Image (cartoon, rainbow, N blue to C red; front, side):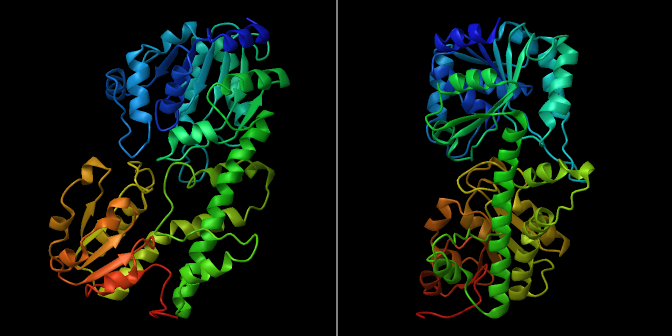
Length: 442
C-alpha cells in the first residue's frame, strides 16, 4: 500500500487505526478517531483498564468534560474496543503510540515501554502501514531508536515497506478532549508526503493548525515548549521566595509586573508535578549530552521546582516549630486541580518530608480514591491544614467549622486559593506561599 492509497483510505475512513497505550492521551485520541468514523482498536497491557473501557466506562476519574460520554458512545457503537493482544494489529493501517517515556535518576530517557511497544508493533506490521509516535521523546529518538528497531522487527525499510512519523501530544488533564480538538499540533514525517498524509489524518479530530515538518523539529518543539514552561514556573517560584525574605507579597508583585506589556509571569506554587514537565526538560538536555553542550538553565530550573515541597516544609516549620507527633492534613494529592493524575505528586514529596520530621500526615483528595473521605473528620486535632492542590472543592470549605476542629488554627496555602480577609474573620491564621507582607488594605 502506497501513501496515496493510504490517503484515500483516510479520506473515506476505511483506514483501520490502532492506538497503543490507553492513558491520559491514548484513550481520548482513540475515542475521538472512533467518533470521527474510523474503526479503532486500543492496545492496553493492563487488563483491568481493558475491561473498564470495554464496559463503556472511563478509567480516568478526574473532571474530564465529555470523556465519559464519548467512551460510552463509541464503545456502544462498536467503533472502539480495547485489548492487550498486539497480534490484532495485523490488519491496522495506522498505529499511534502513546506510552509513557519517563527519565532515570540520572535524567536519561527510560524507553522500556517505548521499545516494547515498537517491537510488538514491528512484529505485526502490515506492508504500507503508517506508525506515528505521539509520546514525548528526546530529540533524536525517532532516528536512533524507533526507526532502527521498527526496521529490524518488521523486516521492512522505512519509506518503502512502512511509513513513520511523530506528532507530539499537547494535552493537560482536565482538558483532554478540548486540547486534542483545539490545540495546534506539529506533524513530523519521514518525508514531506508522509507528513502531508498525517495532516489529512489528524484533520479528522483537530480543528486547529497542523504544521508539517521533520522528525527532529517535531521532537524539539514538544520538549522545548515544556522546558520553557518549567523555567518560567521556576522563575515565579524563586521570586516568591525572594518576596518572603523581603516581607513582600509575590501575588501583588505578579499582578503589577503583568501590567507591563510582554511581562507575563506564571504562578508560583507548592510544587511541579505530572508526567511531562518534570521530565521533558531532561529529555531536551539529554539530547546533547554526548555533544558536551554546557546546559545550565534547564537543570537550575528543575532544581528550583523540585525543592518547592521542601520550601513548603519550611513554611510549616516556621509556624509550628518541632513537628514530631503533630498531625498535619494535606489537601490535594493529584498534581493538578480537579484531576486524578498523581504522577510526580508534590504532595507525596511533602508527605515524605513531613514523615521524616516525625509528623503524622493525613491526606484528602476528592479525585483520588485512596484519599477519599470526610475532610472535617480528617482535620480533627490537626495542627495545620496545608493546601497543596487547588481543587475547586477546597474553595467551598466551611472555615468556621474547620477552626473548631483544629488543635491549632493554622492554614498554609501553597496555591493562593484562599481569600485572606475572609479567613482571618474566622480567627484562623493563614500563611500563603510567597506572601510575607502581613499588610491589609495597602
